[in-house]
Image (cartoon, rainbow, N blue to C red; front, side, top):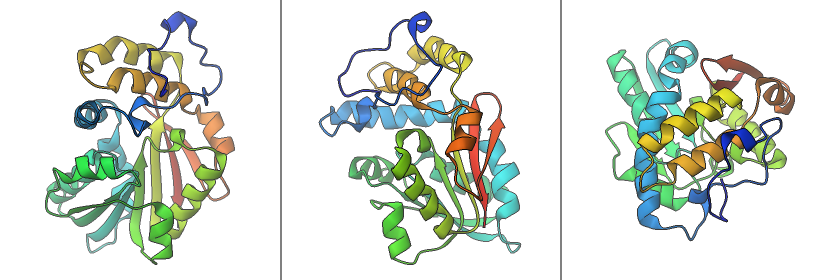
Length: 240
């Protein structure tokens, strides 16, 4: 998604054969309208609840990595508006776990949006993964949602190295799997929820920046594995 503004061309004209690394998101522009940005964070919470598949990932990838006594610390890197952090605490409580979640994001605008709804058990901080490593912090599980496609090669390598250093049990990073089906479905459905936000433009550009399963496998360092999960998702997973 790009700071230059505008919308993506017609779906038939979009080349999805390779990652569109020249695109950046409108909401990443430090000069974007703060009111539109705040609405976008709130609306992406709804979109992520519908399409991210994290409820299933919680059961299949997070719960098995939690300590046997049910008490755990989970780190959400690049937490954005905080919807995943809040969901993890909610799911943990319903499943009988005592989980503390820390959500961090280097963008103070994201932390401001997330902190407006910080339920018991969730803390939001304006920090990077590198700062947490430098501070000697450790967490049972480290997660992220829609972060990997934002990062250049060096940034991604640092992010994954930090994640491995911070997690005592498992790291799980979820992102979009780039495909024409994913792009077409989002292009059709997003106008229903995108009014007054960056949701449509940013979502389409995110898909274009995202990985196929094979690309993610090639991009991950040793010790990590790439998994495809339905319907349009990939996971980068590492066990400590």
